[in-house]
Length: 260
Image 1 (cartoon, rainbow, N blue to C red):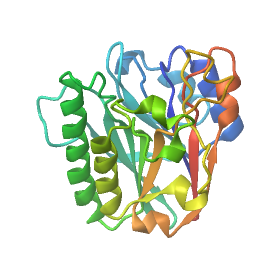
Image 2: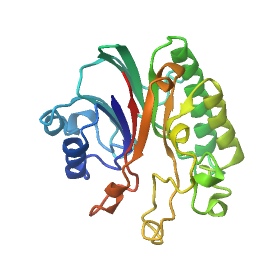
Image 3: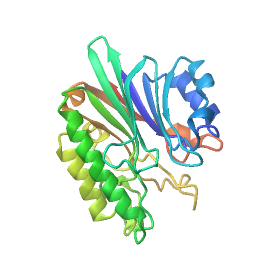
Image 4: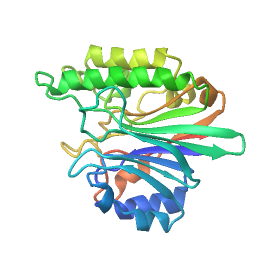
């Protein structure tokens, strides 16, 4: 079973790229972030036409997450528990039944947090705390669980081409990385790092300053696996070629393969 995460950076603007990826790579599940559209304007018909069902939690103009699945999605939850007044569409989860049981998948668009001297950084840290509390509850279900998404976290220096350039940024501040380690310490496995310890494994290249051409990337898109999912880990792939398309997203898809 292949599960992929991708910050598509406007699903309507990148629709042809998305359909190309679905046809050529055909993941079993694709978690999307930064849809930048409402549920009613999401291109459901085009996606269903290539064989995927859709669960969507959209928002006008920014944010928005979705899960696309070849199999029916059950027990869909829209929104991260813990703050009823949070109107930002950043979390959706669902359950997929397979021959071996079920797999629970979440699509996550964690807040950026910049500028750090604004209310955006405390919101990011609070959101990470809510995620950790919910993840702890999900672990108690003892299911294969994949928390997939754009975490807006650079976990370690090797996850950036130029770590010094990110000092003082919300993606790389010590407190941000500590919150990410707290999440891992609950019992999650960073899928890519379980398969590949090398530096230079990036998932995002900024549109500015020739970052793509100079390979000045960072790794901020992650797939975290519960112990039951980690036991089934068969490999990971960063689909770097997608960044070379015309008018691409600044993120590329990242996939994990589970032996189910």
